[in-house]
Image 1 (tube, rainbow, N blue to C red):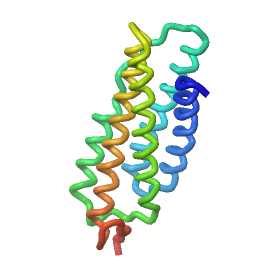
Image 2 (image 1 turned 180 degrees about the vertical axis):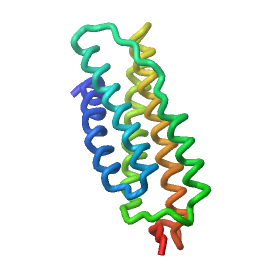
Image 3 (image 1 turned 45 degrees about the horizontal axis):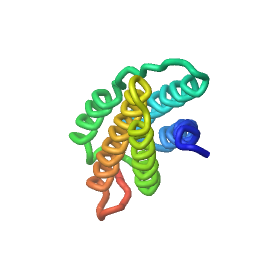
Length: 155
């Protein structure tokens, strides 16, 4: 499997993973953020598939960063009211997933030129944004837990 195939597979896998994370989040704001990630991963997979089919692809910047930051700021204010019953490990796994993808797309960008290079750089940048947002989500959940890695409890 070459790097392009790996990147396409990653984006397909990430969509399903983020759909599950959103369903299990238990926090409406997190569910919205995971929906944004799913939309980004769908755009990435569609762009990579079109590239494989020989099409010229331009991927516009994602609105996920701005939308998710607004949600996270709002949730940070109400951290004592968060009720989380999920698994914090899934956030770390997703962060690792995004880091691997960002590196792979960065490598593809080094090997490409012109608009293909820009496409891979855009996907890598989106993956880095996802990583950072996941890290912030994980930290927010740790803050409202009693001990590092603990669960949030509204009761």
